[in-house]
Image 1 (cartoon, rainbow, N blue to C red):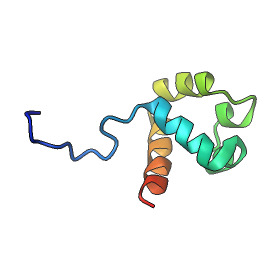
Image 2 (image 1 turned 45 degrees about the vertical axis):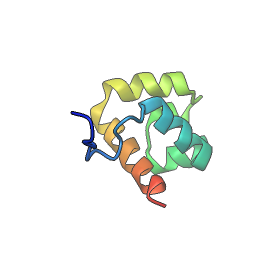
Image 3 (image 1 turned 60 degrees about the horizontal axis):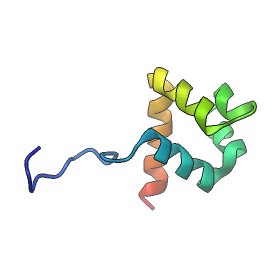
Length: 74
C-alpha cells in the first residue's frame, strides 16, 4: 500500500490480542463463552491460552473477529 491509501479491512492494524482484550473487557469471559462456545473461553480462560487456540483455529478466529466487529460498530 502506498502513502495516502487506506485499507478496506476494518481490522487492519488491530492485533488478535487487542481484539481479545477488548472483547473480554466488554463482555467478560462467561458471556464470551456463551457467544462463542469454545473450551478456552469456558474452562480456566486466559488471554494466552485463547490466543494460542485462535491462532491455529481459523473458524474460531473468524467468529471472534465477527463479534468484535459488532461491538466496534457501535
